[in-house]
Length: 262
Image (cartoon, rainbow, N blue to C red; front, side):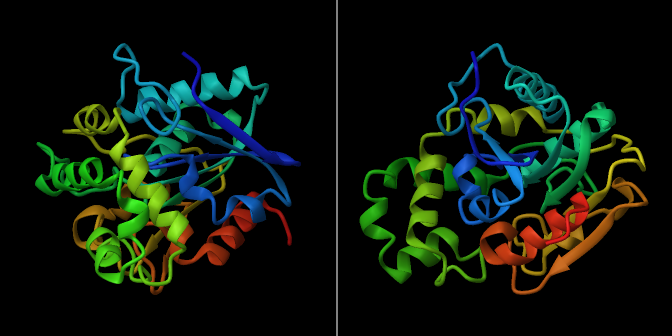
């Protein structure tokens, strides 16, 4: 089954990969600006967004990395730039390790998989977040107009939860609430972390926020796991979704890493 994808803009191709329980809509704040220089391709992972869940599809980051290469080939793209958030950040790291000859540059936004110790089991909060999204998806557009609801849903995700566009919050809640691939993907990365080797020929930037409560620096930002040539950047007043909290800075780093002067 083909994965759902969208394309906007023109120029060298840039693949955007979303995180666990999310969808390609997570990049709506930065995609239009990126489309001024790139052909922006956003793909929904299996069981996420508009892509169907396939019980035969392996959901570990390496398997998903290869699946995205296959999808890009089917769309006519042989080599391309990469950026991904959270689980998507881990996946794009694996993509660069698998086929560096096909990766022109890489920007990982708060990537998962850089933890000191791999998760032995699901984090209890993950099940709670999923259950809340499932139960509230039908009323999310109404509830998220209120600050108390925004804080409950996104207070730990973003220090700018009050300022985020309502559409971003609604989309994120609906995507989580309808994601059949959420737990299969969770279970597939248990006991693992990113341990691939990325060639120095692939320009690489790693971006974390200084207020990332999902993947905090003390446990989940191990620099020794990324290539020595990678640029490591910590953005201020920024949580687990840098493309929401600091969109201009993220766009600038994607351009810079790709070698595009703007």
